[in-house]
Each structure stands twice: as structure tokens, then as C-alpha cells.
Length: 220
Image (cartoon, rainbow, N blue to C red; front, side, top):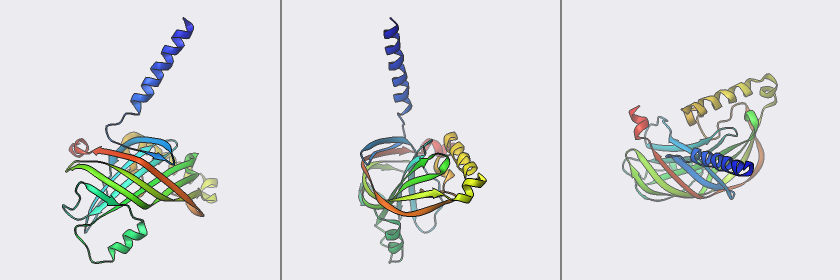
């Protein structure tokens, strides 16, 4: 009887955990083969001269985020497959004469590898594709495959000793957990009081899927 009770308890816990991971708005993928899925939302970041659609998923403690950002001109973001480029590639494109039919896509990843923001392993947008299956004025759905440039960030010694970096990281976690989401950051690689090391590698995001509906958020 005791054994049966334990089995039922384990099933209930597993069920609760699974339901907690089911999000209406989400980004999911395999990160170097490891499953990842987290709640996602549209980011409200003002832009001038072009249209900008950014969605990001966030997991807290450890912090893991995936950002997908589309840069385009009015009416050019339609169902279809678009190449992923790097930040440098986007800057180079911005210097050319604007092709109003083009869409530029960045996919980025960040993972907290040491608690309280002491270290991060990030993936900077590099190559791959994003496919938009469906898009409306208040939602987007699709898939992606991305190869990213892996980079590392470590907390600066002064910030560690003073505790200022720890306080800042805790504040961001609280905002994110309370629903502020990625508004706590200006960008996917915005890590306060850190320095970027020379070490690099490759991060692969495979079998990616996303769905975000922001109609309710815009009414609130």
C-alpha cells in the first residue's frame, strides 16, 4: 500500500511538472541536443526607420533565453523562410541601399552557467533559417534551425567583491519572474558588470518551434 501511494504521488508530481511546462506562448528547441522549452513573449522595443518584431523565451534560475528578432519594412514580413544573419551582417546590410522586400533575422541564445549572474555561455546569431508558418497582426508561428557563435562572459572581479553585480542580477530575476520578462534586458547579451572572454565555440539550436500571441497583452 505504501509503495502504491508513493507511485501515485510520483505520478501527480510528474503531472504537475509537465502541466507547468505547457505554455500557450513558447519557444522550444534542442540546444546542442538538449531539450529546451520556455514561455515566450513579444518584446516592446521602439525603433525608427523600419519595422521590428522580437520574441524571446525566458527560463529563470538558471537564466536561459532564446531571442528571435525580425527587421523588415512594412508588409514585407510574410509566411516564408528567411536566412539568419549575424549582427555584423545586419550592420553591413544597413549601409546598403534598402531593399524593401528583404527581411533580416537574428537568433540569439544566452545561458547563465554560474548562479547570480557570475558567468554566461551565449550564442551570437550567425547562420541558419527561420520559417514563418503563420503570421497575423497579433501573432506569429514558425520554426527555426540556427548555428550560433558561442561566447563566454564572466563577472568582473570588482562587481563580485562589491556585491553590486549580484544585486543587479537578483533584481532582473525578480522582474522576469514577475512577468517583466526580457524587458529586464536591452539585448540578449546584455550582462551587467561582466567581461567577454576570448574563448569561443559553436552552439546549435535544432528542431526549433515558436508561437507567440500578443493580442491579450496589447489590450491590458
